[in-house]
Length: 126
Image (cartoon, rainbow, N blue to C red):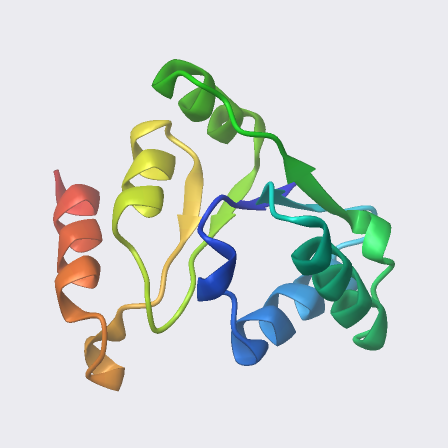
């Protein structure tokens, strides 16, 4: 199970392309996302379909009130997927704190999102 509990506005077409390629390449995998409004949900499912992935493989997690429950969800996932160019800060730190394997892209190479990337790098080295 892949997860990405980031805000939906950070999911851009190039990132979504990569995520859908992962779902196509890993049979029976799903992508667990943060709950969104119905329009956004429908758009993401439609875009998954257009990339050859059944939209039902996108699972939307409802909001939870406690940090313990939020971190507990990360422990159920196999891999946390990061976004670009807005990456590797709070949600990535949550995943790392919960000991969820995290796939990160260091944004320094793109000259964007450098502070968040340094934050996650620091956490990884701790």
